[in-house]
Length: 452
Ligand SMILES: Cc1cc2nc3c(=O)[nH]c(=O)nc-3n(C[C@H](O)[C@H](O)[C@H](O)COP(=O)(O)OP(=O)(O)OC[C@H]3O[C@@H](n4cnc5c(N)ncnc54)[C@H](O)[C@@H]3O)c2cc1C
Ligand SMILES: NC(=O)c1ccc[n+]([C@@H]2O[C@H](COP(=O)([O-])OP(=O)(O)OC[C@H]3O[C@@H](n4cnc5c(N)ncnc54)[C@H](O)[C@@H]3O)[C@@H](O)[C@H]2O)c1
Image: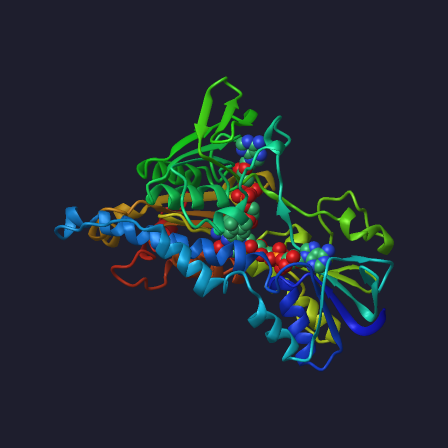
């Protein structure tokens, strides 16, 4: 079968669904192609269910802090509540009827199946070919990267997919990888009384963030009973029908009921036949210009672009691609103030460059790090007040180029720092702003005064 459309969107995760729906609303003839569930990884197996787990885990942790401040509290953790909420409220039992309707009610056509490029402006899905008059938008995201550890491939390991669908928690869990997925899930599972060990190859967990952030996350995990092993990798993995064994570089052997692989994600460009549109199928990502163009008549948005695997990045890029396709004016993509939040307790928010990245760029850097506990609000908060604000200033220009805010509301405190880095508000102006008393974000004011 052959059909025509103005635009074909390949992959309907947060980025692709936004592009397809918005173009359809604008009156364009749009075909969206989806291999699994309309909505993508985020609502069914990633952000949304994991944040529901985290909300539940945080409630337990807060209740367990009651004795030191407010009296007695007895909490009995029950994973069935979490699993049920994920199945019923978040994912509709992994059914995308509502999301598919969102697209078709806007006039978009939905083709189900795994698509690939078949030349510029052409997509095939099985024996179905769609010619795109204006072009194709690639939004197929990423999938878990499974490290080539001997034995691993033959075991029934979990990725985020199985973890999000878990109806019961295992008694013990080994997590391979201490990035965002690894630390968030390790903490939640531990709070539900699962014995968790995290194995991270780098010196610290959250190794792309400030070292202070990795140290804080590791301390928080340990406080929840997680074993955190850093600077070591799995050398051999086995499964005897009941449990996993993981032999590490240093010959230590770990044993647990389940193994979660959280060692990063990658795109598979060869499977999309990108060479038919003149792109390199062996590249890790699709390079894009400031208007999200990858080639003539080809745009790419979301994780596949390698500019930050976050839902907010895919939606930001989607809006730019839509503007470009509709010929509307607007700013090009700008990643200087890229924000991200790791939703551990304490939350770790960060924006822009780390101190190390700023120095590697040759900037003359001034920094400050202030603990949250030293602020009035941190002291009042008491247990659970761990955290800090770190600022990175380009001293020559007198503007912040990066910041981290970690603490009970670290992701929310980040907002002001995000504005400061994005809008390049002079540090001198920030220093003379009024900061509400007694808030966590008041530590930002103190940290500005401590820049050296
Ligand atoms: C456990 C976990 C937690 C996360 N938490 C957060 C968070 O709190 N905040 C945040 O911002 N980000 C979070 N992320 C990252 C976030 O999920 C991704 O950045 C986001 O989903 C990427 O969106 P995307 O538009 O690139 O597409 P994706 O969501 O990856 O969706 C791509 C879609 O394309 C489809 N597809 C793939 N190949 C084809 C093909 N050939 N033909 C047709 N369809 C195809 C897929 O089936 C999928 O539906 C998390 C990720 C994980 C794993
Ligand atoms: N809160 C959020 O916004 C959020 C939450 C989860 C995931 N995400 C996104 O999803 C992406 C994928 O998450 P992720 O945690 O899988 O990837 P990641 O790249 O963030 O972290 C993977 C970690 O695994 C380690 N690693 C890799 N191979 C290893 C090995 N063989 N042994 C031991 N350690 C190994 C790496 O050093 C790294 O620290 C993230 O980069 C992030 O963009 C975002």
